[in-house]
Image 1: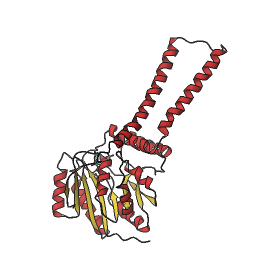
Image 2: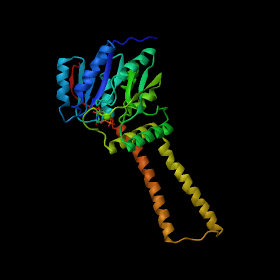
Image 3: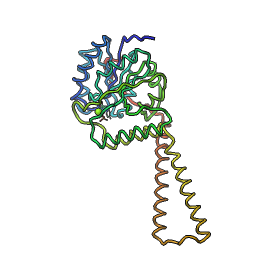
Length: 308
Ligand code: UDP
Ligand code: MG
């Protein structure tokens, strides 16, 4: 089934990206020409405090292909993507960062796979330019997620992707309050394929992800797609109880010397630690249930440009 691309949407979350917007825009326009298709560039302004929004508005005046969704405040990268796809109406919808770490030209390869009939074409980071520690942490996280998640997720694939409009419709009807978009994209299923690319360095500006924010994103991924952390509590409970039972047997037969207060202190601290960690893990799940149960709108839009 050959697909015809009449309109290509590109969803781009923007948080203080004034140094990248013009370069990104001109590279996207070139891609539209190369693919000879109409474009719909959905920029989601996620509470920028620099001149990003006024730059986008100016682009919107000169080019009706530029659409801008101005969120009422910063809702975070994942929610900005989630918001953006609701306003994308193209036959295929690409998602990419604004900083040109995801080279827009990869979309041309993605369109080729989409035309073959794939519903989701995700980009796999073959190489990265981040520091050694960060690269190690990213690699560890993706492998851990692969082992723990109840959905089969590809390794080293971020949010950069192209999706058919049918998939976008499904994703934009999902009411998750902590959306982990790359996970939800895999969860959907259908026909998916990866294309490899070399992740570039940021074109301009600085990363918006502090170490803490990255950790929080990783936690969102693990908690929304795995129950293994919850089971770890039960498993450690069994291990500790088993050990205690052995100790009781040994004591009964008086084969073990009784150690002093140091041993007892260490044991109390160890058990206290295990219990607190377990409560913390439970807390992570409960906080998310609480968040979801409040049924607040996922995001609020303050202003729209070139969108009815
Ligand atoms: N971003 C966003 N809201 C945020 C943080 C980031 O919309 O709260 C956007 C940002 O403008 C960029 C993309 O998300 O387009 C990825 O952010 P960044 O490049 O800082 O992340 P990194 O590539 O360093 O992981
Ligand atoms: Mg980046």
